Length: 163
Image (cartoon, rainbow, N blue to C red):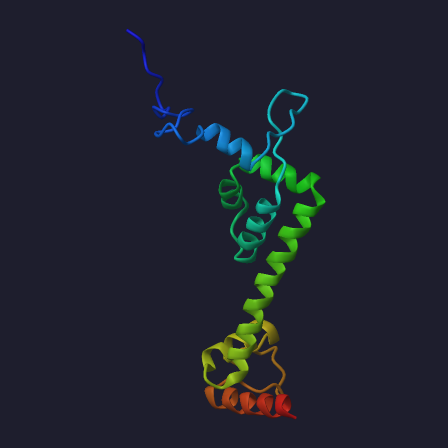
């Protein structure tokens, strides 16, 4: 009696219908075989589709191990390719910055709009180091952050932007 291999689909190299080419042949047509590395293992060479996918995933700040899984490689292979492939490294770095800039821009617009006082206070606390409570170190001329001061500052910002 012939034993079946575990964890292997029944028809891994043959297709269900006779008219369709085997899946292995289709994969070879879509992605050409990769070059052999000196150790005998296959070396991953990113295609244009891989670069496009990496752009989209980097823009939303997906962790590297998730990007690697989506590209079909291990995390170590992806990190090694980031070190040696300048185009891939530049792509990931650039699109991570693009995603961050979009968030910063939205947060800034919300902060100065006057519709989101909590965002204005968050922005002032994080970016301008404002405090709500009195500190012994704080200068007397530094205004206290209160909802009424926030609204006043939003109005000043809107006037400055419209001018």
